[in-house]
Length: 139
Image (cartoon, rainbow, N blue to C red; front, side):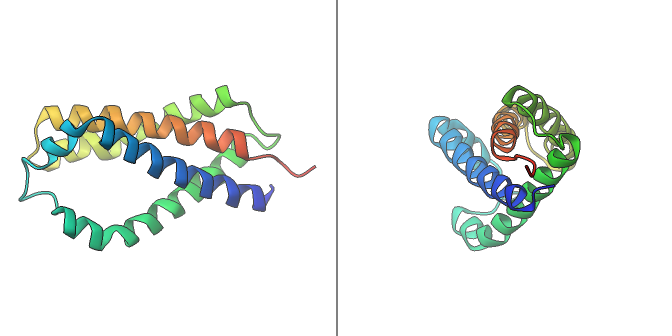
């Protein structure tokens, strides 16, 4: 395994995830509006901003883990299409363990759940592609 490329892939995936998420929320303001319907469940904007550093560190660590898994799955490297498939699998996993899980446990509506499912799935597709484009084995 190429540890420098794993680190680079993880960091680039983190940047891509954050950027894609920002674009998604900017392009679809109805998601923010939908979140605001549940003030007893979700933190205020100010509260989220206070907690953001913790979330960013956790996401970076998670992206590094995904880069390691990719490197173990594709020790010779992989093409972007395999990265797309990898991102889709991660996205489907995420839908079950986070999006639907939250819909079951939190008092939120189906509309917000569907919006989150779509947005996060796109983010994971992008993450898979970025990791596949960045990770290269040792030569």
